[in-house]
Amino acid sequence: MSDEAGRALDLGAFRAAYGRFLTDERVLLTGHSHQAWPDVARAAMIEAFDDAARLVDDKWYRAVFPKMESVGRRILGRLGFDEGDAISFGKSTHELVTRLLSCFPLASAPCVVTTRSEFHSLHRQLSRLAEDGLRVTWVDTADRESLVDRFLEAIVPGTSLVALSAVLFEDAFVVPRIGEIVARAVEVGAVPLVDAYHGFNVVPIAWGPAKDALFVTAGGYKYAQLGEGICFLRFPATTKLRPADTGWFADFSALEGDRTETVGYGPGGARFSGATFDATPVYRADAVLQHWDRFGLDVPSLRAISLRQTRRILAKLDEAGITEHVASSRVDERRGAFVAVRSPGAGRVVDRLRARGIFVDSRGDLVRIGPAPYLTDDEIDHGTLAVAEEIRREVASS
Image 1 (cartoon, rainbow, N blue to C red):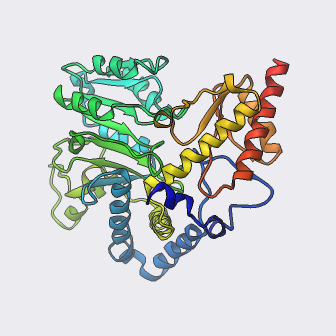
Image 2: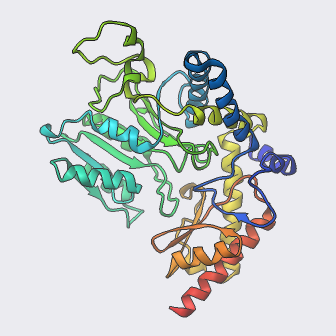
Image 3: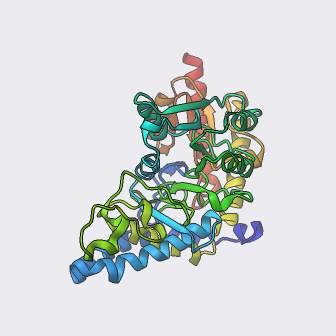
């Protein structure tokens, strides 16, 4: 779908699909964290209950697994991969990445190269494992212009895993030259892992010629509107990695055979699977992905809408006189799907805005403003100007 097609979206009909979330009393500028769910998500959750009541244990083969296959194909397509690639699901990216990390025994002193701008769960997990012997090379991200060059320099022979985000969660900086980073990781024999959470379903990513070697993790909580509990890991189907953190779903078909001491892994996406899970998020994801297709909203069209909206936010912030507080890039190619603004007391700013019915959030000293395709221009303007007003108030009192 083209930019022009994105502009042709029937916004009235689209907003009508979100009757439970969209009200006149609030403006949801939380597109980078918790987007509104379309009403079909609620219907899908009821369907999950009804299928369990109707099928009981038979629900797995007759309903859940077919939906997982459908969801996996659509997710891979929206990620920019072949729809037949291997994909595993988990309730969080932390669960999936920890399973990947378990492939590298600490006794072998593995080395991970990563950035200091990874999301809290990865930063925390790597820091904890470093206490027990994991070697971590932390690449500072303060100088965005030289980030990729410095990151490439850090990927040396002996590196076990290279882990970075395609879009940084703090200020929506889109990391360039991902393909080059992936190729360098493969060149030195490292496993390349990209966190695409802040890109999935809104920022197309050029994976480069070594894309088949990629491990990519993301989830549906943000820009895909899939809700909680539906995260995923795309990985090379030919990988021989053996997760030590492994559940019985990783070799589901072996359940009927004789138990042995040899741990095997099933085909396709089974290798990085865990154990019994709540199937409700799968139903919700299947319904919402069909919702996107029904409105003709593919990733390029959603990106076009997002860029138009973030440009509008930047223009309103300039109009409000707080240009110098903007932390996100003004270059479209380097800006993800939200705009971050620096402010003293960012948490207080968020609290006061919430009391006014304007929903944003903060990370450190950054207030994050996240539009979404169901917002009107008036809502974006009203919310952004309110953010600027509260930041000016905070600056004046500091």
